[in-house]
Length: 494
Image 1 (cartoon, rainbow, N blue to C red):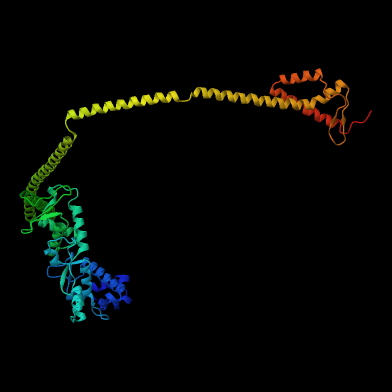
Image 2: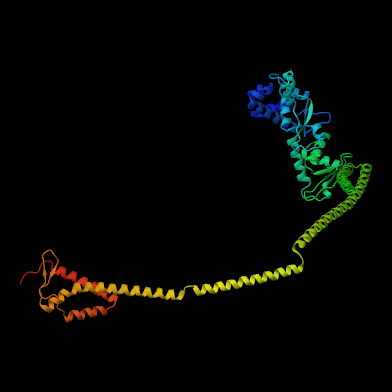
């Protein structure tokens, strides 16, 4: 079992054993008879092939393992062959469907087409659609001709877009103009790093990412003939074609990178020679120790020269970057000046602005005067709050007097009901009779005769305060209760 086949069979639910007969069969006719099953098989094969290509399991071509493109060949079918089900018979249909939905694009058409893949006019007609047209015209073709997989290479659009977006994010965001110019060798190393490859990216994959970034993304310019310089554009500027300055900057950056690598190698070699000299001394091998020390001294001299040169070149690069920033600043100032000039033209002359401001002040004064007039009218027509408060207080006082008068009258009437019978009986010699069980008092004698004692007690009661009246009433109630307790029965006749 090949590594590719083992990878495919370990994809879980998509390639469980119960589905293998259907996946390895010629399911191309299910496009019309069983569309759901057809779509499921297409999606399963397409997904597993793209994943296997990313893992480097697809048989490589003469240029090496490719990761941005999928290579279809006889070796691919052999790698997928099983003893029980044989080779997948509908793999050609899978490739055609992926091309139809623009998940895969033939490499040759991708590289030589001048229009973007995102344009509406871009459309790669798959073979099965042509074959269907031939069938409609009455042509007789074998079914195997429509499902046989052709040898070819196809750009994997999803992977290509992912790599391109990562490169734009890492190589352009927050970068100065000097840092956005690369030699082709530097650019190849960046692509290799982002793809996380052990070996350098192939020429085909490099051409694919260059074409996509330049034509479809509009993010770079590169020298298509010499293929020496790649220039990334900034988001806030219009990128111009590659200039002589760009080539100089790219050469300077390349030289700095080479010197950094040389410094690393010389530093490592110097440390190794120091260890060798120590070992020779321990072994008491004086000639070997002297030779190693001479080599170490020459290595140190070369290292110092490289470091001095690197320091100078980095200083030059810093000045170029500073000058580039100044150019951007001056360009922004010029653009701002032009905008201010246009705005000032729309505003007009200084005299016009002064006249406008004076007129504005006059109108504002008019508004203030109108407001004062309206406020005077409002004060004249408004209700006097002090008079309302005074009237409210008078009404409240009148209500309190009425309540006290009413309460005094009620108290007086209650007191008269209590004291008048006993007073009349004492002055007129009248008898009071308690009827058995009635609790009523009857009077014998004149009913409307006034007694000076009653009048005096009533006047005295009226002169009492409200609290004194209440005390009198309470005391009278207690006296009445004591009388009731002393005389529980009716009064007998004399």
